[in-house]
Structure formats: C-alpha cells, structure tokens
Length: 250
Image 1 (cartoon, one colour):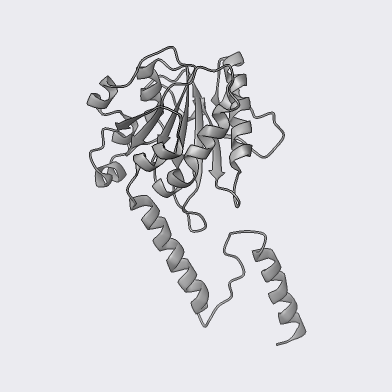
Image 2 (image 1 turned 180 degrees about the horizontal axis):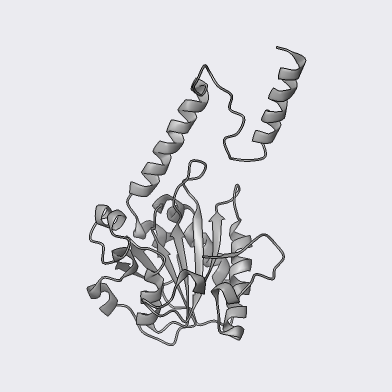
C-alpha cells in the first residue's frame, strides 16, 4: 500500500468515527466491500423490523409508573392500512374518543407508535418523566398511549380531552443509520383538521447516547412549553432560545 493510499484510508477512518453516515466505504470491483454490504443489509432489515414491530402499550405504561394512562387507537384498523392510509392514522377511533377523560388540562402527552415502536419502547417513558418533572405549575392529563398513530392524532386527542397543549412523542421513520429515533412534537391549542405542521415545534433524534439526551430533550420541551403558554403560539412563531442544539418546526 502506497503512502498516499494509507493516508487516504486513515483520513476516511477518522471521518467515519465522527458520523453515522456511510462514507468512504471503498469498493470491491464495481460493488461495495462484502463487510459494508452486509452492514447495509442488516441496517435495512432493522429499519423494516422497526416499522412492522407491534406496539406494546403495556410495557410503556409500566415505564410510566406513577402516572395514569389511557389507551386509544387511530381510525386505521391494522398496520397495513396504517401504512397505506396516513389520513386514518391522524384520526381517533370514534369509540376510543368517547372514553377519553375530559378536564381543564394544561398539557397532554401522547405516546404514539408511529413508524418505530422500537424507539417508543426505548425512550418515550423517560422523556415524559424528565419533562413532567420540569412542569411544576402545569396540570398534566393522563398520558395517552396511541396505536397506529400519526403526529396529527394528538390534535384530536387534545381537542377531545380539553387540553390546551399537546406533546406527541412518536417513533420517527427509521433510516439506514438509526431505527430507534424518537421525535417530540409540540402544539399549542391544536384544532383537528385545521392545525398544520407549521403550527408545531419538533425535536428529533432523541436517542442517547448517539442522539439528543432525555435531559436535553426535556429542557428544550419544557422551555418551549412555557414560552408557548406566554405567547399563545407554537410552530414558526416560536423559536428555541436555549442556545443548545437545534429545534425546528415540524
């Protein structure tokens, strides 16, 4: 191996340690080296598994020990329909809506399976606990565990329960670098069918140690929630002022 080739190889190796992106993989003829090809296939399989793995609300409820929970489903009757009809995942099942508790809640946390129940099982309960611990003056509704759910289902939940603010914790679409990434979507005074993504704030890639930590996510969420309550707005009208990392609109 020439000195130039060795230096190039060491440079790529150093860069790969700083990112999860697949860079500088080299080639074997016209294809990827066998090791990297197998890693890619394994990542693809993990992403597919994350999408199709069943949601286990009982396990999430166990992680929320001490916090009341209620379970709901979307209008999508099964996983296949959920994947084919995103619109149904945004609406509550009519029967389940009727059983939601109603009160003068300041916020309701909705834990939704989304496109990665694996992410929800791993991270959602911890984020709720960390965030709730920072909301001393807030009247927190029972945590809603939602199956076959999209982000906008939270609008329907908040409206039905009488909650002013909704935080949806949902499994993000798996990528080839991460199959267990959790997203958090904050919306103030949502209106089903009217509220859009421009009205939400989003924290993405919550998955320590490779992504945003639970404590970091909770600090950002609690700060945004306090400012949303004061300003009466979320989304493009509400910016993160913590100075730590980035918060974007959904």
